[in-house]
Image 1 (cartoon, rainbow, N blue to C red):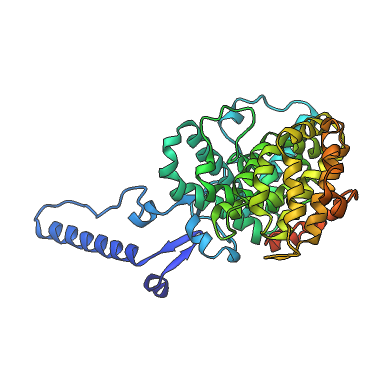
Image 2 (image 1 turned 180 degrees about the horizontal axis):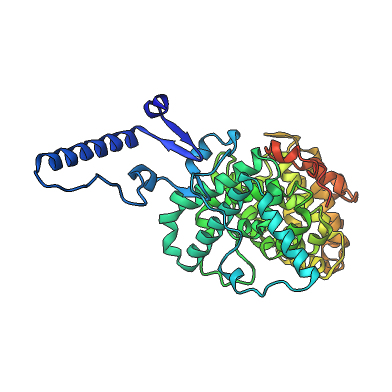
Length: 428
């Protein structure tokens, strides 16, 4: 006990610091002074020095406490996990809305209610924390969207630490992907992107580090077999926004927050391209004008990123859906075909990151896919026929899912990837 009192403790569920020690000494001195004064008075009064009923040290009040843990302490050593929650933490089995739900009467309703209660009862400490962190993140994100001026005050103090804690739990604690699904957390994490049906009065684009933390979480979850179907269900309204993140930021350096955000989001979109239910929505989110503007700025960068960018766009276009036809039509007016031909003519034998021959092949395949789509109206085919570059570098080979898989990188999430239901082959 004396050893604990004399040292520092910074754990997710308990804290004891030099500042708290000084405050305790100050309280002890006040108590001594109180009783000394009482003894010196001749009054016959039975009193003791008392602390307020819900006393907390000043340092405790100032420390971010969410879901029964000190969030910043957990983020300092996330690999140690969460062994307990702060003493007195209550994990409620419901909310106020549950009070007004009718009681289960049929056998089926009773069985469902019992299963739900058992699920909460069997939830681990980490599971309770994950649910609480996601609820806090959802609350703060919704609050900022309602009152954008609040972003500055909550971004560093709450949003970023909480999002980082969620990422750490996914990385180092088993089965947290399951807890995210149970808590409808995928929608919460995606909500830092812009929903296509909402008025764009506010965007989290000016908080790229928060977007990065949330997209890192979603990308990790896209490697979990338990998350594939739920992700395919909730992600469609956010795909257009995800593509815009890539178009705006992929030309930034990898050392920048925006550059990292673009690369993580590009990897996530690559995983979504392997889920059949997402393919048509991917085409609807793609923008040929934005892509043609981006290509000249990234062609000398990492060849793998360039190939993934091209592969991600051409695979969904192989299906001649209405959305693919519209894209091909827009590709003519947006000069996308011309931009791809420029790549074929200007890519040097070795880019700064390696061999560019494969990148040329992807650019040529993309042109072939566009020219074969009826939406182009033969305009792209005519452009290729007249091009000497196409004579040299033309390629009609179709990109496949295997090409895409080779370009996708697993995240650093050892606990998630070791789970029996992990999806390392990224099969949708």
